[in-house]
Every structure is written in structure tokens, then in C-alpha cells.
Image 1: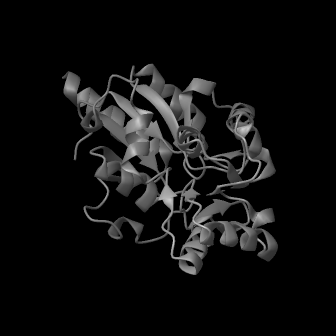
Image 2: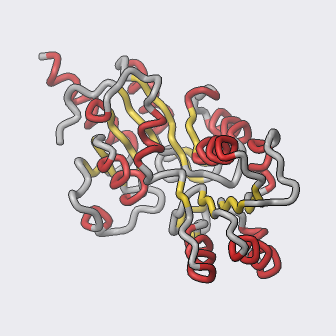
Length: 262
């Protein structure tokens, strides 16, 4: 599918623009080029190990010019789901992410929310969550990512732990982040952009590309971050485009835009 006629671009963060505190080479400049083209840009991420504020600090320190309103996170989606349902969640989240739930009552929990929380994925904490779920409390997964890229290599995401709780209790988690269609549509609500006019760039073939294409968007898979050889063959239909990295993805989009104007 061509990116001609695109009006907005959704961009994954970790593995696409950066890996921990390091820029994917050329991405800062490529982002500037994309914005200068006039296309609307928003960043969408399943990152749950830090709050939106801490994430923004990280991006700005790397060199990316990003404002708070530019970022739509799965933590935001989880917070909104908890508030709408008036739940008091047990939060299996990294301590750096907790501030995004400062206004949520967590006393006497009647729900379980799971994000990426390596320090809390141990028997006693998971067993407490298990008992709540057995008593009928709902399970909300910020996302079910299988793994992600760190500087030292691939690492387990929250998905395996969510699946373990589902298996042990017979509960089905409500997933609020990528690849859920609602997540992608919520991200473009105020962007004056229809799904078919939106391009999603990401390193996760299922959550970024497959999810966005199911929502009617154009997906570009980048071969950085968690990408593994052959990932493009793991979804049907396959990615609309495959790029070596984020700067290459921007070249694909801007090349199509130039063709439209001639």
C-alpha cells in the first residue's frame, strides 16, 4: 500500500527511534525532516517501565524535540480504562511508572493491572494477583508484548506474565495498548486524519504493524530494535513497507509525498 495521501504519522519509540538512552542513528534528523514536510506526527508507545514525564525527559535528553501532548502511551489507555470503570487496581508496574496513576485509588484492590515490572514479577506478588483474579477481579494488561530490545539484548516483556495469570485463573485479560484497534484510533482522534491517511512506523511486526494495519492504517516495519530476520512473514497481510531503519522509513514516506505533488 502506498503512503501517498498520508496526513499523519504514528511513530513507535523504543526500538524505532531509540534503544534505552541511545538514538537509532540518524533518527533525530529524520524526525526533523518529517515534521518539516507538514505531516502531523504523534508518538505511540507500549512502554510501561516509566511514566510519561520520565519518558519525555529521556527523549529530550537524547535530542528529540518532543512535547507531552505529542506522546500517547498504553499507560494513558490503562489509566483511562481504570478510571472509567471506577476500579481500585493492584498495580504491577515499575515504580517509575506509578506517578501516571497518582489520582487512582489503589486501596483494597478489586482489579489487577499488569505492565512491565521486572522487580515485581516474583512469586509473592504474582500470587497475590492470582488470588484477586480467582475472586473475580478483572485483569487489565497494559499490553502483552512478548519481548523488547535493551542494550544487552532482547528481554521478556509483560506478555508472558499476563499469559501465566490467564492460564492459572481462566481469566482473559483486557488488553488496552498496542495492537488493539481502539488504541490506534484513540491516538488519532484529534489529528483530523482517517485511518487510511495514517502511517505507523515500528519495530514490532505484530503490535505496531499488524495492529495498525488491522485498524486500517499503513504499516512500515523497521529492522531495528526487536526486529528478527523473517518477521515480515509473520503477519498476513504482510507489512505495507519494510525499512532498514527510521530514516529509511521517512525516506519512503517523503518520496511518496513528492510523487503526489508532481
